[in-house]
Length: 422
Image (cartoon, rainbow, N blue to C red; front, side):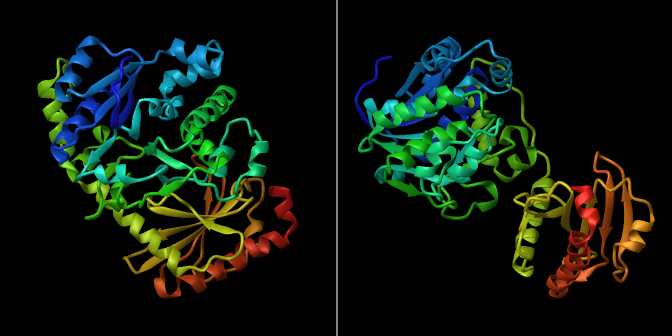
């Protein structure tokens, strides 16, 4: 690959299936940043000549860097015949492992902004190129991401790192060449080579965060409302929306909220040599319901002073909102449900795995709470007992929650039954 020395560049990593998303993104970039003169670097595993031609017609400064599965296996000493690796690349792409190649590109560029292709650019993004070091929006911590490996592997180097070392959401990473990028690349490459079979997610983000933490590299934490913004957080300051999770091209509700993306997609379809489906818009009902639910459950966090050992769920888009008991979530947890109107809630309590107890369990163990209903649940694999209260006004929610907690889990933990169930 021949690359000219340029001051700045955008970088994308795609395979053939994501050409349409990159095409829409390039049209989006051209529209919102008409004076953007930087190179666009595309790492791919073997795009067709038609795809390369179509993408080049949108951006004349695009550079293609081919990196095949064979290249990855050879460079990282991968067992390409392992069942895990074969299953992983069927579901994802081996390109998921090579986001750290952004460090390598600093051999050619002053600064690079890596972007996923499931994004929408809302306004000028050039300000980020004024940053020094590394910039990202935080995701889970580095320690948290490392703990989510599928083999429960422990990493000794964590003892030498700050407990609070951050890690990015990998949809947007900025780097510039004042950092020790060659050393960072080696750390990332070593981690991928030794751990590619240990993670089903997050390994790309770990490979970026680990060298930053180990070498104490200058890090800028981007505002979650400006760059790499989730749709629910978009405001007047937002510059790049990142459709985390379900992709916008699979979500008609999201397309109706952000019709600009659909316009760029339609523009790409007209320019492309390929036949792409006509994505239709439908009503925005589901998305708005999810936004409303998120707002509701976040407000309840302000209403309830949780007892020690309890934690609110991170999932806020459902019609119920779990409250977990640390180290006991598999057998017992609480949840909130909406009541008769926006001012009222119900409190639910799950006792799981108690199917072997007879009906006297209710009378002998569980105290009686006024209008508390007991429902025997044996569906969806959640065999057990479910308790739910009557409607409670939000002003009384904290007191009612503590009453339910004390008279269920509090009494439960005093009972010999607790040890029998756990």
